[in-house]
Amino acid sequence: MSISYPTRPTVTRDRQVEMWRRATRSLPGGASSNFRAWGEETVYVDRGEGARIWDLDGNEYIDLRMGYGTTILGHGDPGIDDYVSERMRRGVSFSLTSEDEVRVAELICEMTFCEMARMTVSGTEATMHAIRVARGYTGRDRIVKFEGQYHGVHDYALISVYPNDVSELGDRSNPLKVAWGRGIPQAIAETVIPVPYNDLETLRNVFEQQGEEIAAVLIEPLLGNAQGILPQPGFLQAVREMTREFGALLIFDEVKTGFRVARGGAAELFGVVPDLATYAKAMGNGYPAAAFGGTREVMSVLPDKVSHGGTYAGNRVAAAAATAVLRRVRDTDALERMDAAGRAIQAGIGEAIARRGLPYVFTGVPAIFGVVFQEELPADYRAWADSDHHLYDDIAVRMRDHGCFPEPDSREPLFVSVAHDDPEIIAGVVEGFTVALDEALDARARSLASARS
Ligand SMILES: Cc1ncc(COP(=O)(O)O)c(C=O)c1O
Image 1 (cartoon, rainbow, N blue to C red):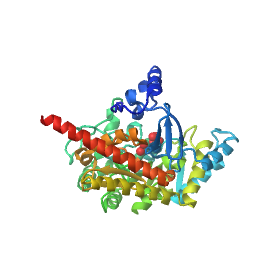
Image 2: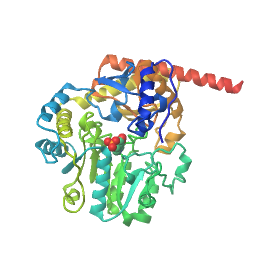
Image 3: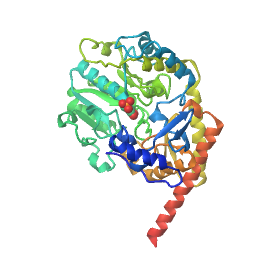
Image 4: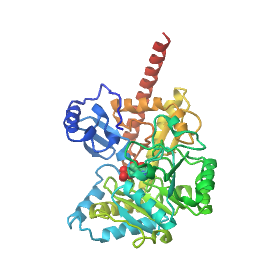
């Protein structure tokens, strides 16, 4: 279940390897998440500032992961951190509600389609509760999700997330349910119906056969966990209509897109209004703030009919951070600057790829995007598997030798922040990508030549 990446020789790693050895004695895999347990290559961070991070060995990188998309304003934004510490001095956790929490709900309702919202601590809890609200509201159990989408680590949607071998997903018109790892009860897996993204025909078949049992379609409106694959024109609108036709709810999982792709998230960007949505990452600039919300009608099952709670839900640290971040996103050009930084990086790396005569296309939007070495946009997770993603994966690993740190897996998009809106950072990313691209192409040519001889 953990992921391993090849060793790159030029980055010093002595202290991190030592830390990894120490960590593995008490932390399984040496990290508190499978996603960053990279064997001996596990990275231990020391600090971050703006768009840059430093690891324990003192290697400096331009960060292109930004905490899997959390840190939209840059690491250690003084305005946010000062506001949080000022509020924290009044006490952190009371399991009583504070004005901070009310402010967050008000801001979410002002900026998005939501009419009511509740805070959670993580994106996982947000999607878990949105699913329960949908089930409680409709009285139905089944949830439709899309292949290649990740909705957190609860059991309810860990199906057909990232199989490396897509043949496990079965026939696209009748997809199999592939549980991610052991421990997911079969009975729960049975409630999930996976469908290829952008595939309206399969979705309609599913609704025609099981429509009366489907509580909701849970969808990342842009595949933030599969390279940023985009909805094809009309896809989200058609999903919206189909859910209405069959009496199911539409849940937008905006954990990666919320307050990043537009002030009102992907719902605003694509002009489609769901019944429920989940938010996390960007709303806290790294502090563990998350929420789910929706129409007054659907959210009215709370507090009396559906369980939702949490000792830390709406705690002061998270609520103060979210208040400060959402105000910044609402009142300043933060998102426009992030978009401009993403566009400038895309222009630079696009030119480098084109100069080498390779086809390419960008998935996602400039603030969260992927690079695919082909002319047409991939439509779903199966198409990602068919693309030349190995070239990107190799580039991403090599970029770390050249001062940039993207996730070394093409399924995870590149994330920029407001702090990337800086000519030096943009030039650093373009240069890191270009050198890594040349090295990767060279390595490929050498391995082809040696295979031939
Ligand atoms: C779309 C989506 N939903 C839910 C989650 C889970 O969020 P968290 O890691 O905060 O539990 C993630 C995390 O990456 C995500 O990308």
